[in-house]
Image (cartoon, rainbow over all chains, first blue to last red; front, side):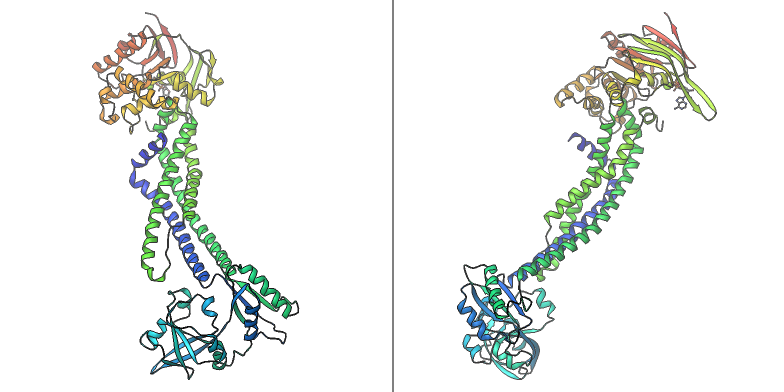
Length: 396
Length: 223
Ligand SMILES: Nc1ncnc2c1ncn2[C@@H]1O[C@H](COP(=O)(O)OP(=O)(O)OP(=O)(O)O)[C@@H](O)[C@H]1O
Ligand SMILES: [Mg+2]
């Protein structure tokens, strides 16, 4: 403790120099903490978005139907017979030009069944969702998010209004709460969204036959997703002659895993770059410590004359280097915190909150400590090795 | 306590070899007060540095407490300087950024003395040299005489068996010189071994025994 106080004092004796020396460490720590925190916050927010799409959701893709394609009727049968499967929804989309009066917009049209509502956990503001009877009768009804309603029709309360998709008129029966502005909506580049009965979509576009090649399933209450996956797998194996290449079942977890791998890779890459700048900062520390040792040769001589051992001198200068590093580290973390606050404030609309990543803070503290020791060792050893008589007579 | 046998120290400057010490022999017994006198450049400081284990001789043998100096390890030498020897230099050699009491405290820190005891002993030492009121001052805020008194306090705070003083009054006026010398007298009366180096006859005469040094050779002067 005593030694740390002494070190702080000799650093304080030359504040300007200490500040300039620490700059390298400060910038290095900032790079490390800010970059890694950004990547982590971004990925964790994307991952949580992905999982909010439905954490109890499996996506099934049939690549080779062997002449017995899956039909809507099959999905209904499976839901009825298998207790572990709560809901199934075919996945079909198409793009269409939507018109209301003179307004028009490009649409992503999703063909859904009544189960989609359960699976995707959507929130209705008014009206109702697509019903089983709508699917059965291929009714020309649609459900749209409030944003789409406001943009195309001009107001939210638009139940009963008719919008046309590729020239066919659909009656609005429900309005959904808008999704938060998410990466998905940004990527979709301002396309509007509409949900219509699956069977109606078949007629809207030609590329969606009555064959279902992709569909979602959800696990029933009291069953895990893994159990539902197992049941589904057995059903499909039976159907496709035990050929497990004919279909694939993927869960959101796999997407999350992939996200995790990407963010790990980014963290290692960015962390590596930041580590290099920290090492450069460490060289700056070494440089200044060498100057300090030379300047204080006489002091070292005096200390040795009154009984300081090599070890004592070594530890003294080593602690000074480490303290210098740790001060720089603390400042760097503080500045990083400030920067992340500012970024969060600026990007408040993107619903991603950038916060200091605890692990990278601990990591940078350890790393700075290590750098202080490694780059302090050479100057400290130089000081410790001085002969008392030479040091005492240095510079008169 | 101190025994020098044919100790030599040669400095090579270019082609010229300077015999700073030339087969010097000296025996100092415990509780003695010896002064070493000689003109400038005669090798006094060189002698003191060797006695004080700050420097090593090029030839001859130096026995400290009966043991040859080569037998001490680097760490043991630091320990000897710390516990057995107290230095007082001509140029004070205080650490400029430490206050008077911190300068005095330093050798005790190196000994690993506990904080409470340290403070007690530092206070005693400063009291003894009459500087307790200046404890918090930095060396630059003290006069030369006061600085030298701080240096004396630092030398005696460890209760060393040997005090080595290299022209302790060289930079001081005659009045403060007398005060400092008075302190050495007292220390001697309390049973310390003192080796005092000077080029001033008046000061040398205050010691019980005087040794002359000239061109690195020592000769005993009996009073
Ligand atoms: N580091 C050194 N390198 C070269 N020569 C030296 C060195 N130190 C001392 N000398 C030489 O050794 C001789 C003795 O020097 P020393 O310092 O012991 O003299 P001194 O008696 O203490 O003189 P003073 O009274 O001026 O302090 C001198 O001739 C000096 O030039
Ligand atoms: Mg001298």
